[in-house]
Length: 385
Image (cartoon, rainbow, N blue to C red; front, side):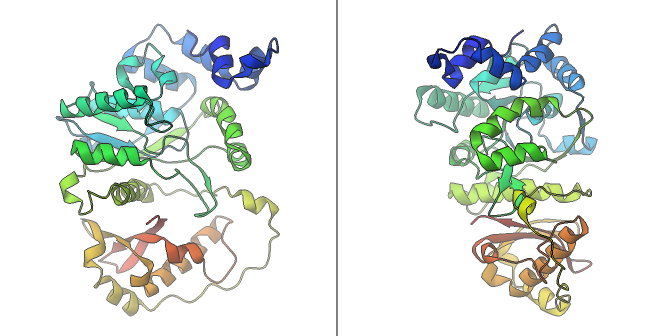
């Protein structure tokens, strides 16, 4: 089984027009595409979820999730599962595994290349809404997706449409802005949304290449699929979100911001010591860090929280989740900046300034988790307006 042949590769990359003999074969070897073909050929006699399991086993990847999280996947009716895209390959197989374990009829939205894998075709809806929405294949694919949802079939989607990379603005490795077409599909279909968070990211070299040029990032993806030997992908599955419970469901941009925030908020429970890659740090000279500012007066923070009821988006047990504009939380923001600096210094990062705040904190909204029993902030993210 060959997922992609030399002829298909040459046509897709347009190197067939160069007329250089052997170039396609050479590039396929360098980009590890031949190794990808070997992995799938080795397991071509398997089918269904067994095929997914064997591919993951061959590349040495396992999925780590709480069995109770599977209860958050609705057992009946259509729904849309949305997920972040940290690796660009293996999480696609993981999403199939998770959804189809509970709902065997579930499908995942992928591009046409993955749809070519016959052993996986039953799990995929072939549509590429992220490049050319007006293309006839994308329009028909989106209509097919909508019809499947209305008939009760669950659909899994990676709303970013491409792998997570280092973001200069947020100084984090995250998805790019989620595609508005996904927001329109969610708004129109009116089915529940299940957020799924995949923990981790690709290696340093991948992010350096992404920082240089998107083409280099794409060229590195096949080898990233193969270099995950021993990786245990940590996953969290959130509770279904009913579209009617979202106050700004008619504004697809705000809708996506909300759903993206809910997805990334799931990652706060997957704590581990890690050092986030930042290409800029390769050229920074270390300096003696300033003393971190004192803790913000707790009474000021509590007083601000009591005035934020309209911004509360979720509440469970002793935790409350808020998405708030900067102007409403001057004291909370100060404490977030203080905690941010302390946290990143502990893993060898940080700004080395007395507080980690910048101009983007003024522009962005802030998601934070409040422990109402302990009366403290337990996690925070900066998100787009």
